[in-house]
Amino acid sequence: MSDYRLKSILNRNFKPVQFRANGKPHYQMFLEIESDVDKNLDKITKVEYVLHPTFKNRYRSVANRDQHFQLELKAWGTFVVRVKLFMIDGTQTEFTQAMKDNLEKSYL
Image (cartoon, rainbow, N blue to C red):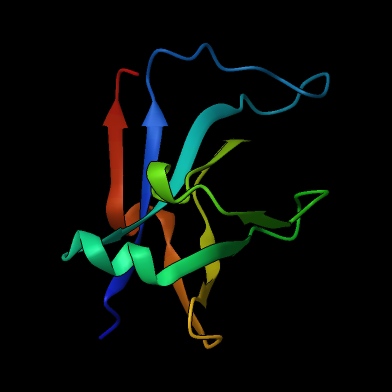
């Protein structure tokens, strides 16, 4: 089992938006990396998230360690995310996880 997992956060204070006429409402969501040992995050230099194929820019890289490599996005539902961790020692770790497996609904 990986030392890392994906955490998904749904912002309940965000008013959903529609990007197309008659389109589905999209909600503000955040993805971030968690570990049982917070120091494990110090081993990561950046994270690449591979989103659902319907996203125009489905490959997103973040390097904000202080925010747990958080990525903000708008989505109408949950999906499986592929996560690639780039480590300080030059290695890479990859895993996939469904957003709904670790979904938190918060009032941000």
